[in-house]
Length: 505
Image (cartoon, rainbow, N blue to C red; front, top):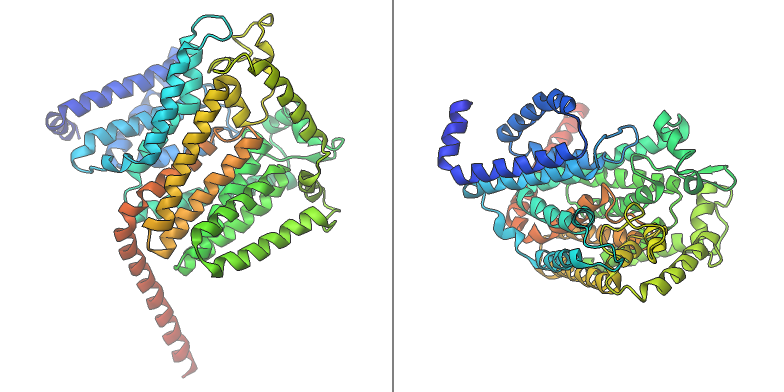
């Protein structure tokens, strides 16, 4: 092994050096996150083992990123470091490995697309925000970077990692199935919370910080949050994910994949109701509307519109299922006089008065820990934004939220163009359409709740949109892959029929 690494280093010296620089940067972030020296020494063997597995198995770090990202907010785990650190370390490591392997697997050209262009615009604006001193407290580079990396720079990392590592139809299908299985686990955990009970950590959250938002209707109804940070993050995620799985299932030509995604999609959408997140209903309908347009298929559009309209009619104009608390909770989304919705309107009216004097926002990274109580904008730093879009508006101003919305529309428009006009294979169009629809769904969720860039949503849905941009590169290999799978399916069908006929003789 040592000789192999030495030989590799001689052939790729500059890239190896760069990898070590990136690795030390990641370790610096890890150390400065507050880990004592003893803890670092104790986990060093695991770091060495992880490094070995990463070099030995090229995709090990990527799959680790997907799984770790999904459970960063799981209350069964209590990480002693900021939740962003594991993701950033793995993403930096993956990019370093990709630079080293550039000669063997040159996939960097796939990263250059409209989505990268849009993200560069957004990241440039967020970089300029370091000069924002609206609060009159001076330039705080530490606070700015902590905020900018979460709302901007991580999106660049996500695009690059997914564009480089989703490099074949087999990897793409494996990723979609792992995502589906992780969502299934969250659905099972929701069932466990409902029927078996909460863990001590979850109970502490419910009767502590989550009491006012998760224990409602006089304490008779619990909004379940599964493996996520809160019920809103879970509900919007489940809505967008189940939508994607149902579309994958509807359009798949391979029977086992069709059943797999349809069953998981149905289970996840059922567990979504336990979150009590009313926005989730609108997320599903908005995403389905986008898919109907992208499909360009009357056979899909007509039945989907009828079924969707039927369920919408039941929720909005009837009392069917009113005896169920979760359904009553969801139905209140159509009530214009809903108390919580009115509170949001009042809060946003207050924000508008303050934000007239802050067109650039109060500053990225500005919060209740660095804006003193006597500061004019302290209220804006401490008021619950209740929405990812409002959060960005407060920190980056009307100019910043305008840039953000424009860049999101550019990214989505480019992806939709690929699905509608560049892809020819129907099942691949289904994958692209499902990912675009899920992106629209989570964006709508982010408009109503602060869930868009919460873990694990950012990586899942921005990563999904990144995949759409590389589908044209994968299409020739996908057609060949699909034909092989269909041939195996037909062969199994033939053998089963022969066995059945032989048993009758």
